[in-house]
Amino acid sequence: DEYGYYARENRVHFHDLHATILHQLGIDHKELTYRYAGRDFRLTDVHGRVVRDILA
Image (cartoon, rainbow, N blue to C red; front, side):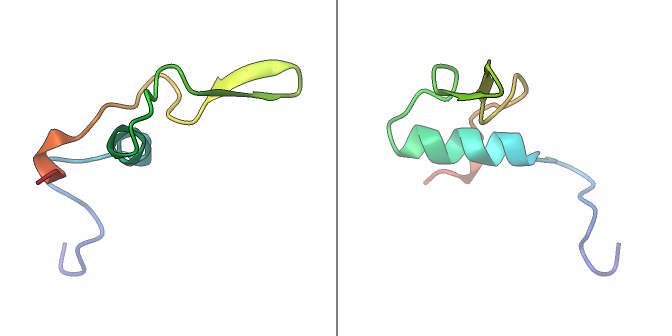
């Protein structure tokens, strides 16, 4: 669109950005969990993937 709100190609979810940042910090996003309300959660949920296209 004219404002750039909606990507038409190479769409990236915020889970993917979290996975990419954790990868750059040397942390495996699939292993990182936190406990909330007696249940383990992952920051990247089950959808996160490292976006290698934005890494230099």
